[in-house]
Length: 307
Image (tube, rainbow, N blue to C red; front, side, top):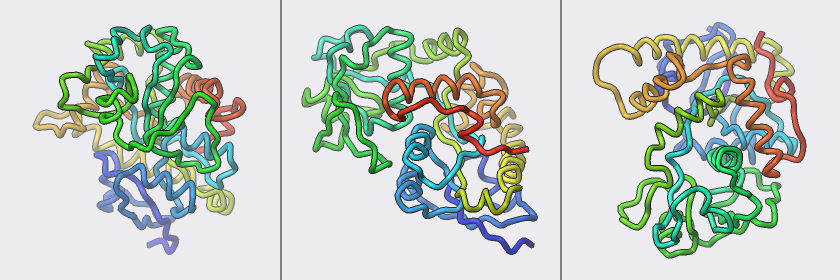
């Protein structure tokens, strides 16, 4: 058994189960799994304290952290993905009826640099023509990267509940507010699944949410580490995909992945740069355009080589 122990913090997913139960192992290192809930707390603890050797990280948080010199590097292991038409809600008393009506409004989001916000703003801009600079972006929380300075049309609210902000009229619409029991809060898109499928079919973009990072000092001292992590996570994912496509009861998470598989193909959680290059380049462009990062970065410079 390997003597090297890597402190690891990743979410509990079907494709990480084999890593956590010891089914998928490496002969070069062992993983000491640190349970952190919610998963978003992993990002903050890594960005601000470098607490883990290997951990999950939101994609835009990583790009922002990298721009501020944080000492970890991405591995092209993309742990979660999502589409975003379904995450936009509004207060019907605002008079909003279509994406065009969002211009000049106040839109809430947990943090300006959060990945769902970047993807959704990019979607609204490129597909529906929304002038992002016309919107006042109202934050219900702070940024994981404490050094980040947001654009001038970004303001912070003392209220940490986006749905409460919607109901009070503090904001007109929200990204990622979650479920509300109020009849006044509506989804902007009546058929978000259909809109997601249309967007994928027309652009080929399959949004990445979370990925993996490792500390730079480990990657530099152990040149084999990125490739070994990639192989290990691939090994853990393979049996899960077989279970995912088999008959039998499925969890809500499995059902969501199967829904995405119906749009993108049999593997709804693809790893590696080749299949995701256009998605990554588009997302980097979104981050530059939205002033999350100052300059364009090449995909190969952002991720460690795995072969």
